[in-house]
Image (cartoon, rainbow, N blue to C red; front, side, top):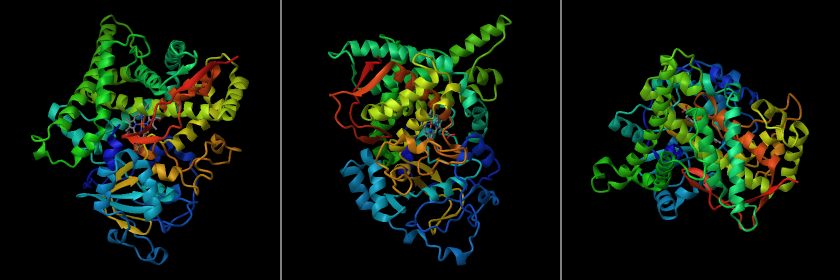
Amino acid sequence: MSFLTRVLTTACKQPLEWERTYFYQELFACGFHQLPKLSSSPSLEVSDKSPGAAANKAPGPAAGSGGAGGLLEPPRQRLGRVKSLQEMPGPNTLYNLYEFFWKDGFGRIHEIQQKHTQEYGKIFKSHFGPQFVVSIADRDMVAQVLRAEGRAPQRANMESWQEYRDLRGRATGLISAEGEQWLKMRSVLRQKILKPQDVAVYSGGVNEVITDLIKRIHTLRNQEDDGETVTNVNNLFFKYSMEGVATILYECRLGCLENNIPQQTVEYIEALELMFSMFKTTMYAGAIPKWLRPLIPKPWKEFCRSWDGLFKFSQIHVDNKLKAIQSQLDQGEEVNGGLLTYLLVSKELTLEEIYANMTEMLLAGVDTTSFTLSWATYLLAKHPEVQQRVYEEIVSNLGKDQVPGALDVPKLPLIRAVLKETLRLYPVLPGNGRVTQKDLIVGGYLIPKGTQLALCHYATSYSEENFPMANEFRPERWLRKDNLDRVDNFGSIPFGYGIRSCIGKRIAELEIHLALIQLLQNFEIKVSPKTEPVHAKTHGLLTPGDSINVRFSDRK
Ligand code: HEM
C-alpha cells in the first residue's frame, strides 16, 4: 500500500470543497465514539494549543458540530497572533534531498519523523523540490484535523494511480477514488464490513484458514534441525493473510498455504512483490516529469505491469463468482453469500467498480495484516511473561482446545490489548496524509486550503506524553479499569480515524485475534537463537527490517 508514502511526497493539489454532513454518523459507525470526550475549544477548526504544550486534551466532539465550509475564525484574543507558513520551522529542501536520496531516508521515514519533531517541534514544514508538506506530530492537532474533516476527505494526490486507471479504462477503488465517486463506494461497502458484527459471520471461514496455518507450521518446523523453528515467519503470515482476506473478499480459497501454490496465486504474489520492490523506484519516479518517461521508462512500465497483474487476479475471481451466481439463478436456486455476492447481486456498484475495489482491498489487506501478525509474534516471543498472562486468559475463558469465534474475542481483553500495543509500537502505516479542504488554524499557524498534511502517527505513538514508557511493550496500558475508563488515544490511531479510516479494520482484527488465540492454544512462541533484535524499516509500510525467526514449541 505505497499510497501512504506517496502521500508524504506528493505535491499539494487544490481539492474540492465539501460539506460535512455524514462525519459523525460514520464516526460512530466506526466505533470511535469511545475516544475521550475532551476539552471544549472555540471551534473544531481552531486550536490555540501551542505545539510545545503538553498534549492532554483534544477538541471534543461537541465542538465539532460547528458549520460547514471554510475557516471558522477563532476569537483572536484567545489565540494570539495567527502565524503564516513562512514562519513555520522545518528542514530546508537541500537537507531533505540529502537525507532522502543520499542517506536512504525513504527506509527511515519513521525515524525521520521523530528526529524532525525533536528538531523543529510538533508542527513543521518540508519541501521536496516543488512539493510542500506540513507535518503534524501532536495528538491534539491530529485530532483537530481529522475531526474537522468534511464528508469526503482527500487522502493525497493519487495521480499515478489515476493515470494508470485512465490508461487502461479501469475504475478507481476506495483507496484511489475521491469526492462523490469515493463517497458512493464507501457508503455501499461500509454497510457490509465496517462493524464487528458484519465480519463475525466470517469466523468459520477464517478458522478453516487457521487450521491450515497450524498444519503449515508443523510442516515448516519439521524441516528444521530443532523441529521447532520457523524462519522468516512473515512469509508464512503473508500466505495466511492473503488466504484469510481472500476467503472474505472472494468467498473462495486460493491455496496459499498448500505445499504447491496454484499458478494464478503465484502470479498474483509476484505482481504484489513487484509493487513493493519498486517502491523506491516509484518514489524516485515521482520526481521525474512525464516528458522524461521515454528516457527513463522502467519505473512507469513496472508500475503498470504490477497493476495489470493485480487487476487480472481480481477479475478472474470476481468473474468466477459471477458465473457461479448466474448458474444458481439459472437453476432457480436462492443466492446467498458474503460481500462479493452482495455486490454482484445488488448492482449498487458497476462491475468495473467491483473489480477495482476487490483489487485495492486485497492490496491493502495482505501485507498490513501479515506484518502486524509478525510483529505481534515477535513481541510475544520476546516477552514470555506477557505471553503467559495472555495464555492464561485464553485458557480460563475458552479452555485449551475450544476454537474461538468472533463473539469470544470480547471475553479476552488482553489479546485485544496485545494487538493495540503491537500497532502502537509498529504502526504499519507510520504516517498518513490529507489534503486540507478548507483553511485551518493548527498549532497557531494558518494552513491554507489545498495544503498537503502528513500526520506523523509513528512520532505520536512513541511520545512519552501520550504513552508513558513509550518504548516498552505494555499491552496492559490498553485495559480499561472500569466502564468509565477511557484508554483510546489519538496518539495511536493505526487504522486512521473517521469517515476515511481503514474500511478493513474489522477484517484485520478478526484475522489477527483468531490467529493469535489459536497459535497460543497450540504453541508456546519463543525467540529463536537465529533471531537478532529486529528493527523496523519503512518500505512503503513499516516492515520488519530483518527476518523474524521464532520457535513454535508444543504446549504441554
Ligand atoms: C493491521 C491491518 C491494517 C492496518 C493497520 C490498516 C491501516 C489503514 C490505514 C491507516 C488506512 C488509511 C486511513 C486514513 O486515511 O485515515 C487504511 C485505509 C484502507 N484500508 Fe486498511 N489497514 C489494515 C488492514 C486492511 C484490510 C484487511 C483491508 C481490506 C480487507 C484494508 C483496506 C483498506 C482500504 C480499502 C482503505 C482505504 C479506505 C478509504 O479510503 O475509504 N485494510 N488502512
